[in-house]
Length: 421
Image (cartoon, rainbow, N blue to C red; front, top):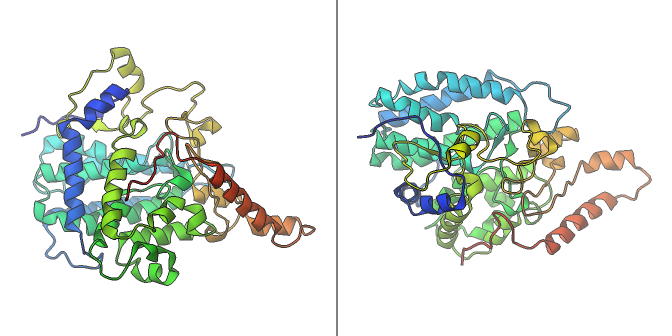
């Protein structure tokens, strides 16, 4: 059915991206997302999916193995940097090494498909070179799930379990990796993003709530409601996570989520999330330039000149060059250029640098197209400056954020008005 081959990057230019958006591959991805989305309408995380198929059980076992690798690979002392922990590269190498063996446990998987599938699987955990993670890596995991279904490991009857069992297990595992290795948010939109790393949990989470009779989008501002329903709905679990790792209120650290909460129904939130995903993930060159094309996801667009292919389409590297692009931890304080965002440390790294607990000292940093604001550790600031009246630092911090947000226009790479109404 497929002439399996290791997938590779193909897209470097806007015309190529345009061709991708009109392709069968793009349609297949969108259709799969829509199918998974519909499969969890009205479904809680605690709902039973029994009996679980052998394919679902095997994939859950693979994720358990990845978690164990992470636990066996602790972060190293990286106190001199706020950026990604080098131990992530060790974790990545271990996963890459065992990935073919893990895939042999999947019943019905053709041996010839393993190199193609392991590429998506390995790149689902973050970028080894940059020690970062973003929606492109999340897309790789989705593509891995799609590939497993196409080769017969999953059946259409597994869709609900794929979302609330496998995908949600992946998200919780990524939270572990992000907090352990301080993965930098790849191409972060900063305050104008949903959260620093993920998109699909908000899409699937809003689908779970789409037919709910009582809970409304504005309920994300009620802490008791968030705590109660975080165990049942991805959307509230994501809100709870963002609130835990960032300071101030949702209005300040996540104005996009705050804006979305004003939408009247979960149905509109869900449809808006899908439109937003098509525009901000599948429609953005900084994301799709890293997409891997193979036999299951074929590429039939314009061909890149040979010189550009050799220089820009390395399997794990950056897909185009920037002047002074040095790479490495924190992108060497230089960055990947405006197309890929400014170097932004993870909230975990920012907190560690200020020697404070995550909930009370996490820095809020806006990425590409936004402003850069760090709240800092207010407790330490007060202790070091007893001469300053109590409350000055807090007022200054909030005033700076408020002023910046008022001046900021919703424009620039990746920033668009929310298309929810």
